[in-house]
Image 1 (cartoon, one colour):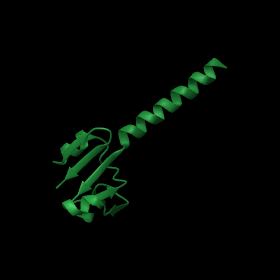
Image 2 (cartoon, rainbow, N blue to C red):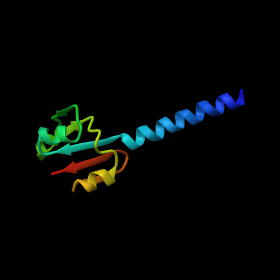
Image 3 (cartoon, rainbow, N blue to C red):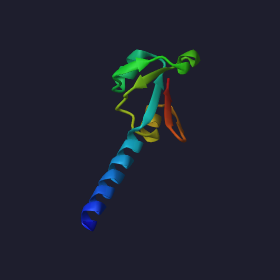
Length: 85
């Protein structure tokens, strides 16, 4: 029984690490830019008033390094945000 519990804990840990690494909020100047980063659609929130749209589900940017490679500004805190453009 201990081995089964250990496997479950390890699996949950791995999923958590993968999810945390992939959770980056990407913001660009245009919706067409969002599509280029693999976003399903772009949304308009409070960021829109600052000249950015949110790229919902942008799969091409997974961390600050990906953001900076695309000449973006990255802010890593409780959530990771990438501003491109």
